[in-house]
Amino acid sequence: MSFFLQICVAIGSFLALFCVSDLYAVMDPRFELDPQAISALKSPSKPQQTRGRRTPGTSRKSPKAAVSRRSAGSVNASGNAPEQSLTLESPVPALTGPEALARTQSLWKKIVPSHNEAQKPLSFQTPVFSLILDQERYPVFARMNGGRIILDQDSSIPPLVKSLIEEKDASVRIVAQSPLGSKKLISSLLEAAGFYSVEENFAIEFGADPKLTVRADFKVEKNADSLINQDVIIISNNRTPVPSSLGNFLKKEGFSLYEPFASLPPLVPLESRTIHSVSAKKQAEIVDSILSAFSVIAEKNKHVDVFATANNGISLAVKAERYFERGGQRYVVTTFDGDPVNYTLFRILETTGYKVVILNAADDFRNVSEKMLSRMKVKGAFARHSLLQEDTSGYSLQMSGFNLNDALLPGGDLFLTDRAMNKVVRDILKESGFAITDR
Image (cartoon, rainbow, N blue to C red; front, side):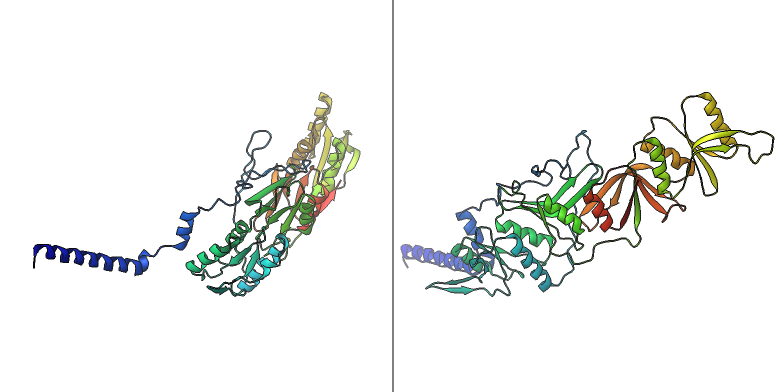
């Protein structure tokens, strides 16, 4: 064999080996190209909803500016950070697959305009191929632009078929997510729907003291005019519904609340708690209101005979602005005007067994309450208390006052406050098991 012929055979063998290796690489699934990756290279996808996207805690100002609202994490007007608010994901509803799906579909019909085409199962008929997806297995949801969302519950649609569907109809989005009823699934559906804005872990506050805080898993604006038109959607995954009064209030404020998985009865304490609201401004009336909360009847301007039981030949009567008895003790409430004689009389009362509450003319509700509670040995400090705590309810209510606990109190405990409560706050508290008394 000539040297030239040997060279030709060697080159032929090398080319044959290269072709076999290349054929193996084509058939080996490890080297299979992802059609979605190819599509991404051909036309990079645009970030969804960048026009209206906002990070949590930066919601725009509501058209009703009369009510104070701040998103979680904001700073109050004094420059101090408010109480820390936790961003918690709502618990996954313990619902069966079919029930969770039915509730999700019901929610979707309420928040997305219905289109006849969007309600039909996905099918393609061409001279080259036909494709039909079973709507029972792959539910269809409408998009804002008239397109469709295909819910791939079990992630069973092959990647090549997904690519074929998206190439054939650009208005179709395929969402592969489980479990049904989870926050993550709702988030994926909302992202695919094409809303103007979707905000997760939304929080809004009404008022300062009392302060009502409402949290939702999602806030949705359908279009750029949703805030102006007071047509904002908030969605909560909580199992426990909010009180009906709160839902009605939110609706009036331009927020339509949807709780698709709420199935448990509202949380109501087994025993009613009492809130006593002191609306009086005059000091004497504040004292009377506090005593009324304690179910104590006081005598006004009573002349107390200091040595009536001493039988020592001394008769001394001291005028008490308020005199009452509680728990076997005798109490006198009086105002000190700076006269040293009056102060001596107060000391005499103390030495003869009376509990004297000495008020100054400038004492307000808090000062009066603190002095009276201290003398009666009732535990309780003035602070902002959480009357309704956010656990699985999605809302909370904080109010300043005295949270009291004493065996002689009606019911054993009492919340004493001078904060004005509007009808909404009152209705929410009453639906949550509180009894409210006023004076």
